[in-house]
Amino acid sequence: MNETLRLYYDNPYLTEFTAQVIAVAKRNSHPALALDRSAFYPEGGGQPADRGWLSATTAPHRWEVVDVQSDNGTVWHLLAGSDSWPEGGMAVTGQIDWERRFDHMQQHCGQHILTAAFIATCNAPTVSFHLSERSVTIDLAVNELSEAQVRAAEAWANTAVWRNLPVQARFVSPDELDRIPLRKPPAVSNNVRVVSIGDIDHSACGGTHPARSGEVGAIAVLGWSRQRGMIRVEFVCGRRVIAALHERDAATRAAAATLSVGWAELPTAVSRLQETQQALQRELAQTQRELDALRAAQWYAQTPESNGRRIVTATLPTATIERLRTIANFIAELPGGIAIIAGGEERVQVVVACHPDTAVDARDVLAAGMVVLGGRGGGQARLAQGGGGQPAALAAAIAAMRERASHG
Ligand SMILES: [Zn+2]
Image (cartoon, rainbow, N blue to C red; front, side):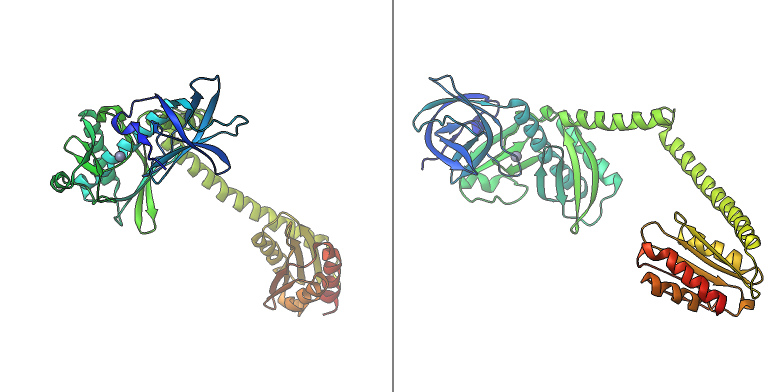
């Protein structure tokens, strides 16, 4: 198979070209065309494939290019499902989705610059790079990275962008290669393509780059985090900086409008809101405790005494286990008080508490209920708790516990 002449090497701004179909095949269940020459960038080196269209030069037919892959020097153009396949030898006109390509050129070239910046400002080398539809990441071979270091590298990178340095890509001879201070050794040994950005970065790279660094526009670091012993830095360049700003601005404005403040006052307003919420929560817990004490006393008073015992049973489906315990304890502090309090919405929870003068062991009472319920539990003579089993058996379990408590 002949190699495809890659037109983007010489001219990354070429958006239209003519070529001949040298092979037709099915790849990844798409009709695919190999061309003798192409301006389409095939996926590789961390840069995604181009998209675009191919048209038959002599017939009114246009195919959408949905992926571009390189295979042993041949560039394959994968087409959207098609009922009319192009033929071998046919002449086609290619058209690149330029908006997508230029975005990739901005992100990719921005990555060269930011990588150089991290080396220059804090000696942190990039070990891998990933460019996706939304964001760009580089992994730095360092354990720590402070905000000050990130901002220093970002400032260095943007200065390099605004110096509008020439970006040159060329194939070099082995002799010439020896004299170029490459950032890292090339992956291939012959026919190495070197991309130089002014005097700040020289890399072996087969990707597409703008002619000058100024076209990257701006570089903004959005975040960084630990990732498998390295630091992953997420950033955006060019048009994506504006998109990221708009996205954050929309979220900030929505939050500020909800709190009726300006965006700059958001941090203060949010901490104030949090303080208020915490105070209210404390107040609510205190009020609930007081209410539970009153409720416990009322239930106790309404329960007839028998054999020196007042057995209070209650079900509070939405109460937490802490509240069930609090209420049970309030009841068991009163003379003759025995509390059997159940709760839990999906999983049944039961607390049993007994005043010492009743001579009833809370564990025995609980056990009588757990047998019926099919649950498990344990505790002390004065306070025991358990749960699980069949929620449908709760009423029968409470009846069994009451029975056990009155005769124990
Ligand atoms: Zn590159």
